[in-house]
Image (cartoon, rainbow, N blue to C red; front, side, top):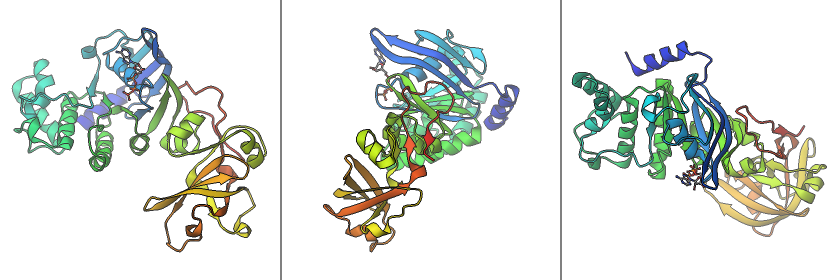
Length: 373
Ligand code: ATP
């Protein structure tokens, strides 16, 4: 039976029960609170990412789900079964680490079948399962090589095959693409997402790279200082960030607050608007007024990015905004908006998002950021 069929059948049995359920999870290392009250439900077959800056607690959550680290308090269920006190080998999960942790003295196929050997799976069966896993990651011809005879991306795929061979219901991935160069990383992102979709396995993925999380995930939890700030789909996270932290961490964002917010938007608060939503005009008569927020200012900096140009504009009302324009035509009006140019900005009022959430979202449900209407 193929892995995909097995995973699909397993899902049927436990339909509606989350693959991973976390409640009130907390971890203290001495005086350091690494994880501070995390609640999450992750569905079967979901590609779920934990995203956050270094030290925000995401790896510690992953390690507690794997069973490598006992929680200080809280509860972890896998498929509806409380595993909080179970050792790693008793949990139906496998982990792929950033450094791959391959055995250098073993061939690729021996590395992949190692877990099955430990479980005393007969030789013929473990060979065929290892070969199947290697073919899954497009390394069917590489079984006899040593890890040192492979490229970084191939080694990463061996690590993946070694986890998949156990046919886990949940795969835990701790920055698995972190050691790859940017181009390979992008290729592997697409491959990993396709593989996950094919297999129907639940992926819990740790990354500090917001672009990676947006590209691959069904949903993302944004961590900061041990707490979840927001759980949402990539689109909602980007379009409707709940807190100033999320607005700043996911994509480039303009956060407007204080006097500038009141003057621009007619009400006090903290607001976010994405750089690509803002239009830049040299001529005030071109500025739309209907349903739009408008502002005037002076260009402080212009950065040419190839496909787009980024401008930083100091506003007359105080504060500054970043504006991103696609370089569709070299003769666009905005091209004359060099440093020191006086410009007018406008954006649809609906693209201004209130991020005044006093408290971060710690529940597993999407947050309640809102667009201004
Ligand atoms: P990174 O992306 O750098 O791995 P992270 O978000 O995964 O960061 P964690 O590794 O979970 O963060 O660490 C969270 C906090 O807990 C940090 O302040 C870290 O120093 C601390 N920490 C993690 N493991 C230990 C440990 N074994 N002993 C003491 N403190 C620890």
